[in-house]
Length: 218
Image (cartoon, rainbow, N blue to C red; front, side, top):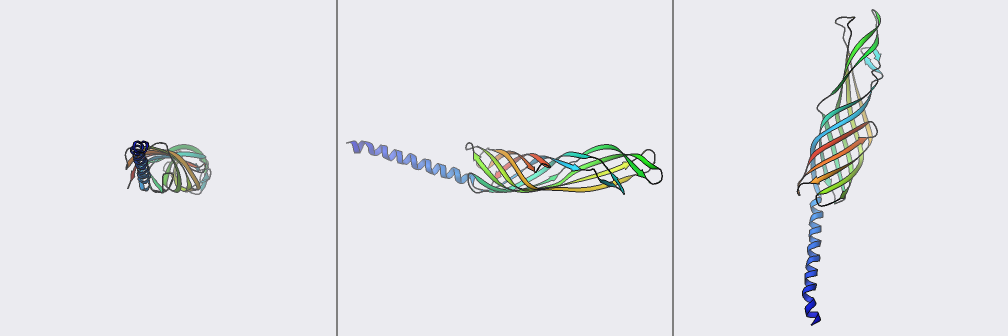
C-alpha cells in the first residue's frame, strides 16, 4: 500500500524537476546569441592645447575638457548567461566651443592680443570588450567589461584682433587617445528580444562616456 500511494508523488516530483530543468535550459538558451545596440552617448575627453600652431605662432590655449553627444552602435555575442564579447563604434554629432584672448607676436607690430574662438569635436570612438554579466533576475542584468578603446578628437581655432582689421589666423589639430578601456552598466529586458541598456565606460583617465541604448537580440 505504501508503494502504491507514493508512486503518484514520485511521478509528480519527477515531472516538476524535469519541467524546472527544461525551463532553466530555455532561459539560459534565450540569453545566448548575437545582439546589437544603438543609442546616444555623451563623451568627455581631455585635450592638450598648450602648444597650438596658429599659422606659425605657438599659442597656449591651455587644457580643455570637451563634452560632445555621439551616436553609438554596438554588436556583440553572448556566449552564455555570464560571458559576452562586443565591439563599439561612435561618431560625434556636435561640438564644444570656447573663447580665449592670447598674446601673439605679429611681425609688423609686435605682440598683440588675439581673440581665439576654438571648436572642439570628437570625431570617432572604437572599442572591443569582454563582458562579465550577473543576471539579477530574468529581466535585469548588471555587468562589467574590459578591453581596448581608441578615440579621436579635433580642435580648430580662428584668431582675430581689432588692432588689425582683416587679420585672421587659423589652427587645426587632431589628438587621439587609446589604451585599456573598462566599463560598468545594466540592462533591462523588456521581453526575450528587446531591452534598454545604460552604461559608463572610460579609456584610461582621458576619455569617459555615458550611453543609453536600445538593445535587440537576433
